[in-house]
Image (cartoon, rainbow, N blue to C red):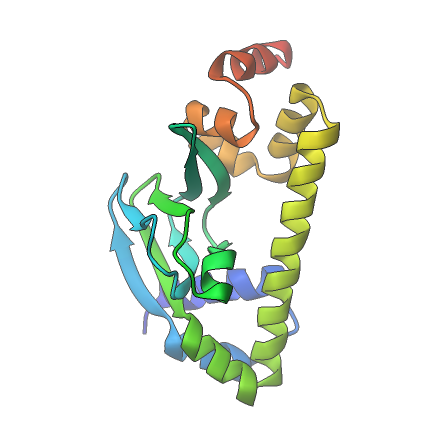
Length: 194
């Protein structure tokens, strides 16, 4: 038995739907596929149709895109986090978001078609899937509100408080693009907090 698989699934489920019973977890475990990637590998390239949700077992990944020839980080994910190129997956259209391994990674792919089949037969898996979508919507709204209403200092402080792992492990250039700052602005914000 893959002990990392169980630990990863438990972390993901407990973060979204902690009441999920053993039976639902077992169904999820049976469809998850382990993949390993080296640092710098592109896990989901631009232009493909995303067929999987990804749960990070070890390491850190980021979702990013290009705008005006600049690399912009959309999200960071690490152990126990769920990654989904939501528009591509739900609409079955080519993705503009890419997923890159920021560290050597072990991830578990959850085939979307198999997940949907499980939602038809398991109320628990259906609720877990619903909680994934709800969380994704909330994260997108919080991020949009932060961009609209918070200062650079407030955005960095929020990231430090909610995701200290990102601040510790992600390259500063990616953190800066995630916070919609230049690396120079991020450096000033960080030095002002010491």
